[in-house]
Amino acid sequence: MCAMPDDLVIARPEGLYCPPGDFYIDPWRPVARAVITHAHSDHARIGHAHYLAHTDSAGTLRTRLGSDIALQTLGYGEAIEHHGVRVSLHPAGHVLGSAQVRLEHGGRVWVASGDYKTEPDGTCAPFEPVPCDTFITESTFGLPIYRWPTQAALFAEIDAWWRGNAEAGRASVLFCYAFGKAQRILHGVDASIGPIVVHGAVEPLNAVYRAAGVALPETLRVTDPGVDAALLKRALVLAPPSAQGTPWMRRFGNYADAFASGWMQLRGTRRRRGVDRGFVMSDHADWPGLQQAIAGTGASRVFVTHGSVAVMVRWLTENGLEAQGFKTEYGDEDDQEAPSPPGGGLEKGQAALDGDAGGPHPSLPPEGEGAKA
Ligand SMILES: [Zn+2]
Ligand SMILES: [Zn+2]
Image (cartoon, rainbow, N blue to C red):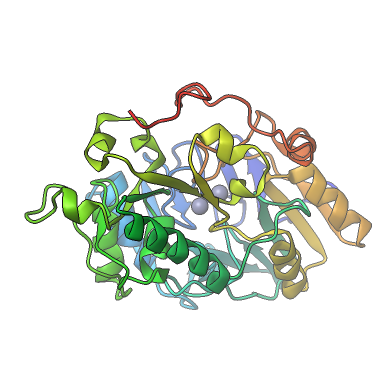
């Protein structure tokens, strides 16, 4: 399959481009008009002259890119017409405000899904399949080994770990990405177990979620009055991966630590991160979720943007669909800890199947030294 003259989205050096509409979707280089699927930094970059995104992305986009960006917002299902292209946004279930972009022009319908997750998590509008002729999908976890536990099973595990640590009198430090994953954890845990303390990188995003009406339990900062050694011994502490091994950690004394990421499904990732526990938790679809989402669109043509591109293209082709990869510069919000060798695609797939994806992480202390400074 190759690009056809009337394709609604084509790959350009700046990003995914809609020729009849003359705009880009999640471009990685500065452009005049950008439709943004969600506010993670690899999809929402600085420097575009005009942004279009979902209403619930406004808070995170302005926090990250500046309050003065030229931003137009749409609700889910609301449509605008631009140069004859009908553009509407639909829930992607990835993070607050995440949207699939539906394009309709000349009787054709294309959907660019950005990042998505199929299981509802209570912190953002659940993924909705949008019927289309051509579907543009991610494939971050596009390998048969990736199968997520249900939300209920995941939080039963996290709660049991926290409860056990609190009973033993040690803090439970859970490293997680500050936007999306931290709020999912807050929303899902049993807050009756103990106090919850968050790193300074997490709290501004909690505020955005709360403002959007997402119920989150009370969160404390380490500098708040009453937050002392006795309180911390029973606390769940949420911190971004970048806090690992920093002096900020010292106040927690003899703590237990864990990491929440889809990559925790891989043998060796937890050990490489130097944490006690790994929780398999992702804001992306797992392998069955990707298949279910793609089938749900009814699309006969599929473009794959990032992740295990070659594996997914092969699987789709074997299943009778027209499929090909789009070369993009998207990563994953867990990139710091993600095993993503340059080029992605099959190399990544093969490495992951070997159980040895990733390699050294330059930002981390060498294996064996741990991070409990
Ligand atoms: Zn994302
Ligand atoms: Zn992505």
